[in-house]
Amino acid sequence: MSGAGPIPSRRATLPRPSPTGLGSAVALLAVLGAATASLIHLRINVATLVDSAGLCADFVRRMLPLDFPPVAEILTLTGQTLSIVVCATLLSAVLSLPVAVLAATNTTLNTTTRMVARAVIVLARALPDLVLVIVAFRVFGLGGIGAVLAMAIHSVGMIGKLFTDAVEDIDDGVRTAVRVTGASRTQQFVAGVLPQVLPSFVATVLHRLDINLRISVVLGFVGVAGLGAEIAHAIQRLDYPRGMALALVVFVLCVVMEVVSGSVRRVLLPPRARRFAGRGRSTQAPVAPTAATLPDGSAPLKADAARPGRRKRETLRVNWRGTALTVVAAVLVLACARGADLSLQQILDGRHHLLPVLDQFLPPSSGGIMGDLLDALWTTTQIALGGTLLGFALALPCGVLAARNLAPSPTVAFLSRGLILAIRGVPELILAIVFVIATGLGPVAGTLALGLGSVGFLGKLVADTLEELDPGPRTALLALGATPVQAFFAATLRQALPALVAHVLHQLDVNVRSATLLGIVGAGGIGYYLINASRVQEFGVVATIILMVLGVVLTIEGLAVWLRRVLS
Image (cartoon, rainbow, N blue to C red; front, side):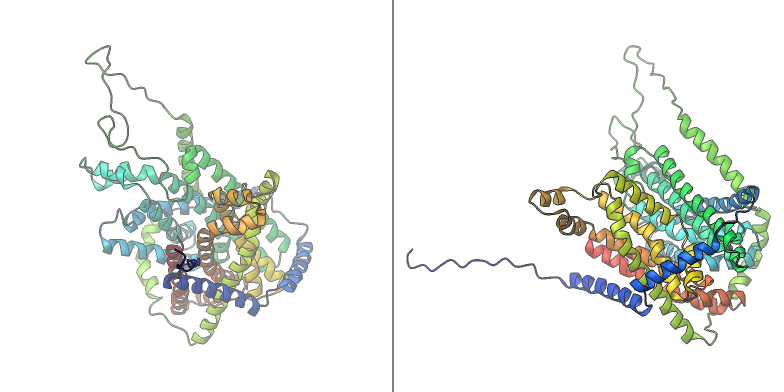
């Protein structure tokens, strides 16, 4: 073997990147570049943040001392707001359930039905609440029924989508076992699908209830009764002490709602279900039907061995806590229906006006200002991009400190969670009002409001994502001598990247719609033209603006779906 030459060593090389991988990297870099360019164009920098902090401090001094109305008035306004919000959320849950069943791949009737149901979900999510309320008021007149219907229809966009995802993620074995017994489609859903997705349904509805409470503040600026309307009246007459006092009441309600929602989830859902609630997963291992089990997984009655021919007497166990909660919930729903001033007669009278009102939106028209509308739409997109990037930059460290497996101590994690909850409790419209008053009219106020508001939602999602990661890779790197920072970037952040990208793109989708609504208080963008066209009844222009915003939202959603599929 002396004549043999040296064995060539094989160099380790990275795998050649695929076109799909390169495309996803380019798309992410393009979004990041557009968001960075938006911040630069809007002149959002450290100096702007410092100046804004000083101006906000001056505004705080001007609004103090807060001027709270009498307690009886606060309770009345709170009751009106909660009544509308609760009724709208429950109605949206009822409407979303059949839409989700028809939209889910494994429960739909056919492809056409599935596409139509998904189109309904996307359209409901894209239509601004503001426009729906304006249409509802013209159809049904002023009152709670218009606000409830508008908020419920818009909520179908979110609840229907999450319900659909939950139904598609079930274990079909249980439903198949029920189907082979000859059960109808309804029986298959009740026995084979609903028990698996119920925890996710409960979590989604409670989360939407929290969101609708914040939306009610925005709708108050177009006449929806409650705390939002009183805040709007106070701001319009420059009574900042009264307006901010009522905003503080809304903040307390949002925090209380978050705490109550968490408590209800813990009571209603078993421990394992609570762990996976909201993620669209089956929360319990399905029980395959065998000779010893029925199709629903329960055991059949067995004959008593000691006394042939007789069966053991089944004892009925009453879940008193669940029964009590059901009774309390029913009473609250009836009280809310009365507090929202719902009227069946008003609905029956309004249906005759529906088609004439909708006809006013057709055909869409630019009103001779298409150039201005395109510029305003780009400004709205810049506000959403800049606000999302700014929010994620602030949310990432907050989320890391709030994650119990990464925080330096349990105290730091608890305080960080509290800070995120406090930020999430402030509606973006209130933040926009504060920044508009402090920094002046324009997109800077809208970007800062969305950036700070995004911290509340993204911070929680980041913390939850980091807590659910497999600790193995990080532990291995730490054992090899890596520092915590190195282990975070090399293992933790790399594991969490697909989920974080999905969260950021979802927040960008939400911020586009939020940026549109913030225009009604002078935060810049196309929302200014939307509210003005609504006030002068230029509904053709309103329809054009809706279609423009819908195009942006669909583009972002399509990008998000594609990136999730590539990165997963």
